[in-house]
Image (cartoon, rainbow, N blue to C red; front, side, top):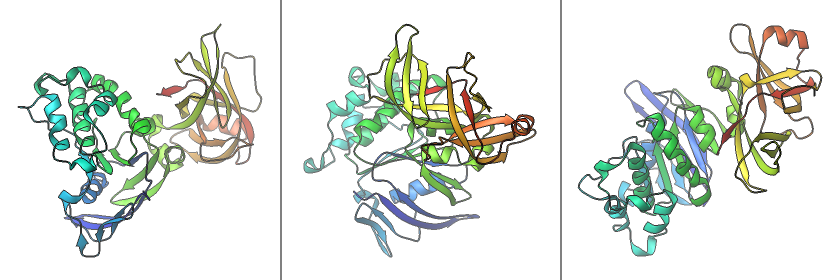
Length: 359
């Protein structure tokens, strides 16, 4: 599959949507932006629920080209809404099989047992939906969508109606979509934390327009976005388990910058681990200063600098030897910036005070 290419132009009252999208053929693509930026309008346009001017190709198949429009019922997609909208008179299993039974046998790519295992639903199959928690209901809704064997899965803020406990419960199951789903997922969110944890690719929207798009690692360290999100500003790095220190109960992760020590993880050598490093938890120094309680100190080079509010500066850093699309962010005071003489091209040491594991 060649991915999803679309040009969408529409108007609803005072709001106009004018976007060009190029979405990868696999992984999770997050449509990110504040309320009213056009995220849900794009999802509804892709699903055929909103009319628009433009073209849309899903793989090599035209879903809209000029005046030729593929009807909603012929679009092989799954749609997960903010509210799970399960059938209350049916059991979990009957809800899951509702779309499956209506999918032609030759088109079925997934089965009940497989999807139930992915989403941890095996023990819930005989329950009535009224007896489910919010997180369980949403997992059933995702399963029901997957059992239609879609070529594309659309998810419209599926966690927004859940409490914090339910969000924590469902997150590991959403993360499994990376490993198991052979189809693209378009995920709408206004939460940087969700995007950092789940997405591979990100489209940043504002006022019905695309501000920028790219890998989640490069987008989260885009200075305008990072500054606008204050204390949430963070870098996301992809790492690989490289070893353990059994004496001190630590796990070693390797990434573009070098080695990262974190608390002991139940992982195997070579496993991939995504980490989130908040900008507020990265300090800078001109010397390595190894006599410190901080374990993670990396050589880095300054590639971008921007003011970040009263008395604050945001510094984007890269690895001097391996420059690429997984930079690091540091938030420091203007006084520290001046004392260190930080300029673009300055080589220094980044001291990592805390690391969040996005498992």
